[in-house]
Length: 288
Image (cartoon, rainbow, N blue to C red; front, side):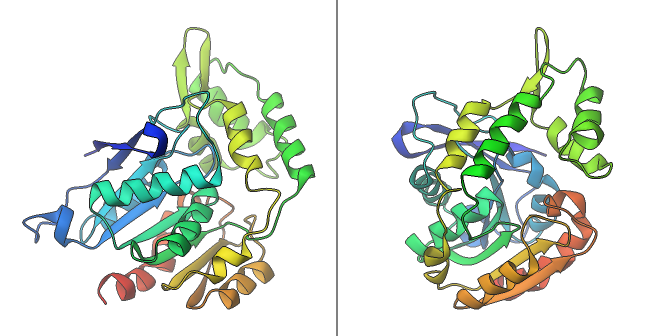
């Protein structure tokens, strides 16, 4: 089951929220009585990347994944704000309109930054936080230039989805060794057009979204998070162990987990190991 719920973000931007499992059977009104979970994908991602996580969560909790502005089936207005404030305010709107708060917010990469900024801004709406493979330090101008060059290297349009899977899983110069999960991940963000397969997002909007956070560090907001928080990294991901452990130290109530044999796409690379890493934390936060 996949059920779409329309949400209005800041500035009137139309957002698509998704439930990928049946609501808990022991609640007559799951929207109000089940502990809520909001799932936020990373840059270029979409709500469906959380489908596996949302399905097992939905057995006991109301789990909703959000297509953030410019992503998935949410609106992509060319003149809309793609700022940190806009992404955080959208997540705040989603929690309030869906009646999820106070919720556990689980974010991957950019979605994790949104999650901890929201937790710092609205502690009344966030009862727990899971940060998946996102750095708190600034990445810098060189990183932004690398991403701009990377987008230009994409051989779009792709003739087939098989070509998408092969390029992102094997041929992409950023791939160190074949990674079928990465190919599948990017196949999910493609849509068929008259001349082939293209991303559902606009690369320029992704760069615009990214430039609002790559130049700044975000330790200050991390220190303002008052709820329990779990920092999860893939052993071969983008978040190094030393920085992850420093993030845990900075968080007032931080915990740490590591997933072996996983890269940046931790929840997508190793869904069972990801579940094992976060489930004890969730059990503690959502049943407290």
